[in-house]
Amino acid sequence: MKTVLVIAAFCLMALPVQLRADNAMPSGLIHIKTELTYAALVKKLDASVKKNKMGLVTRASATVGAKRVLKKTILGNMVVGVYHPRFAVRMLKASIPAGIEAPLRFYITENSNNTANLSYKTPTSVFAPYKIGALTKMAVELDKIFANIARDATS
Image 1 (cartoon, rainbow, N blue to C red):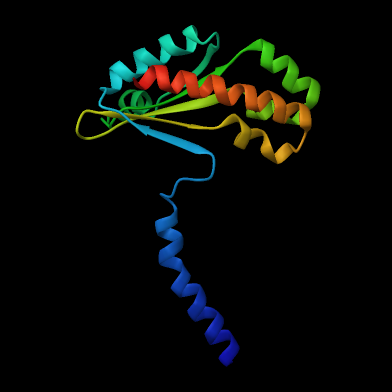
Image 2 (tube, helix red, strand yellow; image 1 turned 180 degrees about the horizontal axis):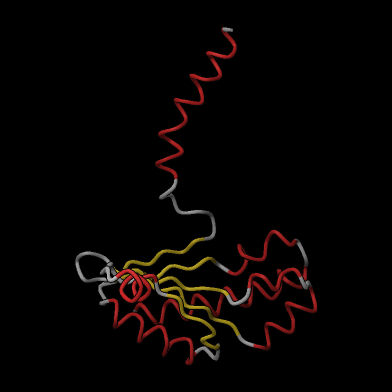
């Protein structure tokens, strides 16, 4: 009985830590605070993706969905999928299951003070679980491209 109580006590003590950890940055996530407005950051990201010879593949916005479907207004929030066929071919040659990771994504979030942030997971962290040399090599190349996109978009 004492063992059960001790285990339960440890679980309860860990609960608040786990709840706070939900907002922790996972390994490989880059988060850049900017002074740009949400609209300006969206525009600059689009231009930066093009400048760095990548493609805008998808857009998903909880802000747009909340407004259209629920008639609610929330702060700007958009996930932008970015990739290019030259990397898709290499990725799929190395691993068909890795296809689930494409496109890689940038995440734009608006703050209450009218500024916006840009976040993304590094390609090396996205492809690391596959432990395939060709994917790792490609991801290192993509890390540089994504860092350049982020730098150009947030400067």
